[in-house]
Image (cartoon, rainbow, N blue to C red; front, top):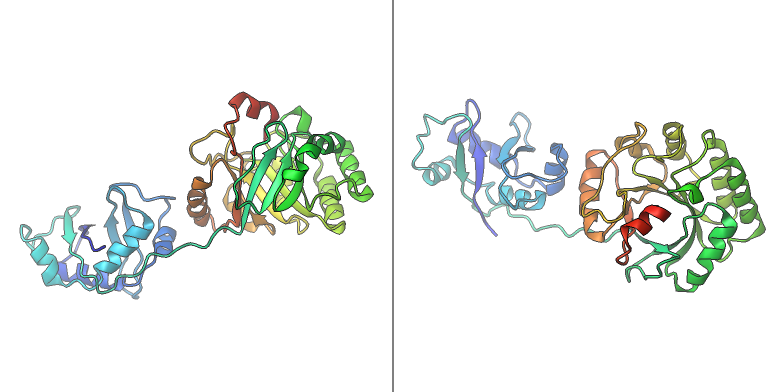
Length: 347
């Protein structure tokens, strides 16, 4: 659909120079506009830069309108790419072309000559579900990996709690070890018990092992690395999930995370973008000085855990700012689980 957009006048602008700037943006994509701004989503009345494809011609200054998205902005700019100075003047007949006021808005009429189709994003590579052992609600029908979650780091307890829901898991089946409270805390002895179960075949009914690392002793980097290596050697996929950007209850969480980023034995790294599991939007809080840009160095796929699937577009746009490419998501919400239950078991 063709539509007018509004241009914010800059120092030295003329109708002719503005037309040249718009023409230089012909073919611009939503991804290119998003990459040129520091905001995860365009905000109404924000003035953002639409990158020019012609050397020597500056970026176009676009004033965001209510309801705009990066995709709609790209489509609108492309619709106007063939506009001429005369057409701009005609659309703004109340303004003198020789006396343009800096900061003022002028309408840019659409021509449609360079209209581009709206892109259709590919479906996520991974769609997971944290399948709670105490609240047996199925995940989405398109689940590719189902993770039995009990909240226990003790492997014997985790296996016992997960056994009743094992037949209902779909896709690749994971056993989860750990959680967000004392029951999920990690220590050297806990990891030794996990390694013993890996070697004995106790986890043979599962395709992968998910380590939910939120609380634990310091100095476990080497023990975690060895456990991940043992799991991979036994044929398991390894998934590591942490609270927000780093484990909240481990003193040396920052150095531990950088060890995780560099560990080739980890297949999937899943930061949790929530605290209670009932958030209506992603929570991008960071912890222990680990930034989202640090995730760009990870050898593993980054597959964040989110509350609802409709929050994934925000994951994609926000991570793009930090040069991180997400490879899908893992859902926490699959039913109306009460907040106090989530806080007790924690993920």
